[in-house]
Length: 640
Ligand code: MIG
Image 1: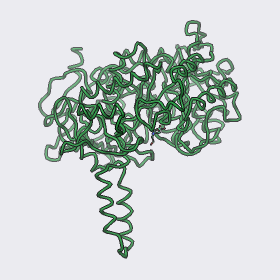
Image 2 (image 1 turned 135 degrees about the vertical axis):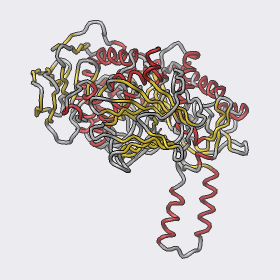
Image 3 (image 1 turned 180 degrees about the horizontal axis):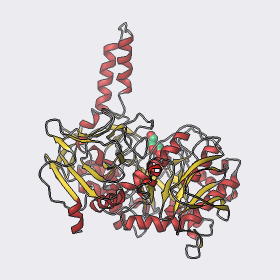
Image 4 (image 1 turned 90 degrees about the horizontal axis):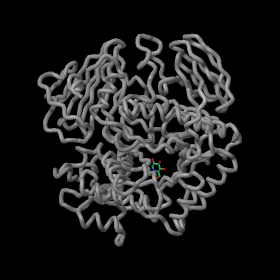
């Protein structure tokens, strides 16, 4: 531990709140936060980037592994349009590494409000960091190698969440499964197609009127037995929990929350009324330890029924509208009534109504009781999903003996100790498969090891080839879940023509599970990364530095996923001699030794490339019907 203190310098500005991100108390340093310059008037940290500097980190964000050349804003947002011009997604992981290939340093900005990272956007060679509210703990991390910086950072913020073993299997999800019958049908059709499935997700329709911790008794008569029935088939049911609590007389969660003052209130002391999935809601004040404990214990209704996995949604928190803002909008509309409007007024009118959801003003209307301190929401906005997930994670220790799968949509550094993340509402686009590839190492740096994207794409209609290529990459991501939106084309793997190929791919995932778990656990225990960019290992290799679509997975392999439509192969860069495996199934593959350098490699639609590094090995299990039956002891090894 003492070592840590010599590698981390903490600079304190204003009076920052304890966000809960860090687990080690670093004494404050005086003076300039070198190599940054701090401008107290503007509250801006500036670093002049060298030409060779690359910038890594920021977790769940758009664009490349190298973040240079764009502006990113930490401001957790429910925005399904993950285009490259977006500055904010659902997460805030304010950790960066700046590396010129020889020297490097890290930065962690512990500030739970809006923080902007201008990484050569305004001026190509200047990195500036600016927080809306200046109260900040600013950490500068010293080290010789990027991986060393990652480990030091992770010692500062604590060990990553370790999910149950079965959570490394394959999950099927879709917004639209409504009844136990729907779910039975999914299980049955997977079985008929002989494709393994380990988890089926329950989206909002399982609830009674979208009320948290209820199960619709008509759609799920005898829920407990149904959970068992699925378990007997080796399938875990994973229900969703939403952040907002429905306002409804007689609903216990609502009534208890009101009675105990556990909801977020406005300046005048009345509870904020927002609208999200269940309709009108109050937001539980997860930042209030008493409210958090109360909400966490509510999961017991479901854990008692045999449930051992959850996904926490809409916890940015997403707001469709608030009652207050709606009134203002109607007031605004009044002013237009009967008027002969021109185009400029038409634009204003349009903006008026489209400003309803996730409105910045609404996030300034309510308050938290954060460990006894009254704080306006926008100042701690990015903590909300973290504290919802923490509430659940802490409660699980009390309410169930099982290890529980838990992941969230919104996140902040520190949440990685309690659960994983999925990357939200992507599209069935080839560019989003590539985005998934590029995001994984950034998420790993920041400690969000159990993570993954909606495979096949959430919004829009997928195609069989996109699904297959995405599954081929998803094989290596810890969270491996096929999920899609209501109204999109069905994308369960049995819907497609090439069922046998999908079966082979899911079996290959099962075969890889011992390798994945060994390396994942190693990353948890040693505060390191399960998925890495090539440049983190191949120091001094100028070509490896710039590779963005090949990744190192665990200690032995490199992957090179195909992410372009109609491609029957791709170029692969090998930083050293490797053994290439081209898998069609876990026991059908060809192998070839390739020298260091560039190669064009044919890869048919149903094939997966894996490259074994010299002196390393890949262990494989014999696939089973489900994770429960997987023999993790008797493994075969492919070595090089
Ligand atoms: O307004 O529960 O990101 O995975 O299927 C959408 C319905 C709410 C957003 C989540 C998505 C989920 C959907 N939810």
